[in-house]
Length: 277
Image (cartoon, rainbow, N blue to C red):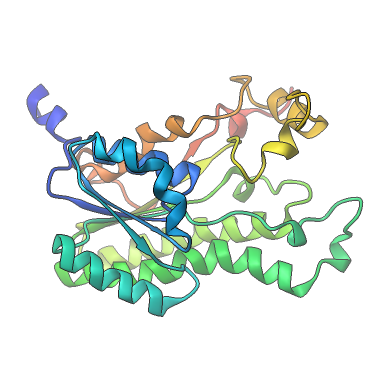
């Protein structure tokens, strides 16, 4: 492969990428990067208005953007979104499952014993991360199966490798996402087409709206005790920024990784490699 072919591998002209949770911090950053690489990006979210903050950035790119409603826990809304996307762009080439997150009612701590976690909170965190990955993969994966090509990229977590204190349900659900990624990679390649690839990224600790004030003090901006522990166990000595995910994302979506399926790539500043000594 010559240099021109290599550079063209990251040109997504004519390709349509759907991002669940596309209005979120991580999904939004991925969408803007892909649009900058000429892709048609679809920001699917259960609160599409959250994507308004991204409109100016998206309009300044070469790619086209579509914002649609879709709830990853309601397959009928995903099916309707898929119909709208196909009408607009003709096909779906890639799916990025960024929807997910923890729920305070599924978090064990001083005030909430694991034994007293409410059923509703447990189901919310479990369903959002696991079913919220499986359901879109069914709806959009079927479109890929019909065309015998496509790419699915899931978002696991460092919590899948090393269960984190307190976030018991989130850790278990992300471990299931990792397992599901590997299962689906084999299934799609063997049953439908080896040109359908399924991989995942496993982010380390990124500051988002969900965890910002668990890791930093709301008043002073200083690290909390939990934040200090994380930094102490991250060799690079910092939290991740959303753009730190882009290299792995673009690589796994591009044809340059066409022989890569069933893997989970840590993007964690060395957290998973550090034993603490």
